[in-house]
Image 1 (cartoon, one colour):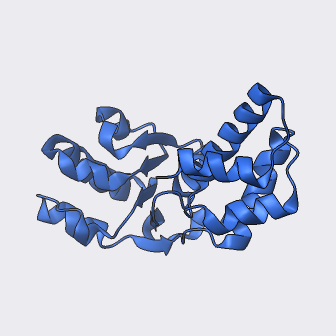
Image 2: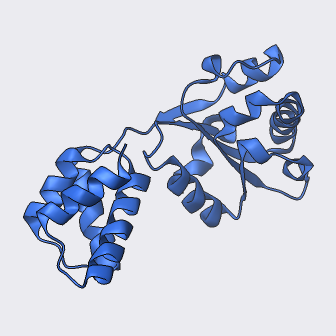
Length: 190
């Protein structure tokens, strides 16, 4: 895909929690056979010279630990020298990560940036319909609209709400109604 034409073969995907960043990284990692890792669990494995591509989700979490910052710094240097492709994700731009290594921050600033927005109400409705379809959960369009208009804009939260609705409807052996959806929404969403 288009990732082959990223400037410097590196991209930083920014977006709020629940915007689908992790899902996009997983898809990319599968397509490119990249190593997928989370920023809070970086190990020397990311430096393996056999890796042609690396995806680091929540790369900003590496900033909490000097050893992980050092690993990320070495990965960026190796990737540039060995022509590897990198896809990193984070909530905010590197300037907000509180990095202790100025050289790491300056290298991160060279990444092309793509921003992913939180889903709007229409997209939330489509996601809810798909989640219900995947579970073969019968739910009316008015209940879908009700949920989409009140649900925090998070794909992970939408999944939890539908899972809970499905479990509750099965346990009670009842249909999913708007009052049931309101009750579950109150339990799942803070």
